[in-house]
Picture (cartoon, rainbow over the protein chains, first blue to last red):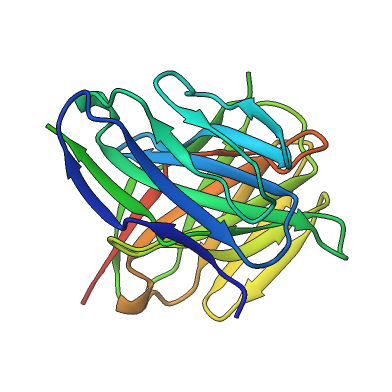
Length: 115
Length: 111
């Protein structure tokens, strides 16, 4: 089954304690990205990756790091989390479909609370 | 900077009635997506609109795209409770698959 998985699904942590949220896809997609969702703001892109070892900033990259060492994995790293990073995080992967557009697949989400 | 606006942000609908919600965007795009999100869940893809005048229908939902007006509409026919959710439009730009989302419209269907 084609899917994007994220772990953990829920995480409560304290300010400053480094954490990593993993994302994995089994569809051999080139393109992966991370979004955060906050009430009243919709989803905003944090980072994206066009392929292995190719990453770039999205609209709200401050306080986050990513890496893409393997095609299937795209972890999101918070080196020193702060309360304003409390949010719902979605990983997405996509590839150019045969119909000429990028079909996005979203993971189940990770709800992060930083106290 | 691309801006995507949805309005209204919240809509209380009466069962059985028809409604239309809107998505405006500020720069040229060749693809517009509609997603549905239930509380605590991920995003479910509803429609992808790729060209001016495109119309897609699925059940009680019909989406259309006017690229000249930079406007997409989502029409709801005879609303039912199962349609209660938050609906996002998102615009794709450039040669990659980045999406810029609107803030979402929360629909609530009452008896």
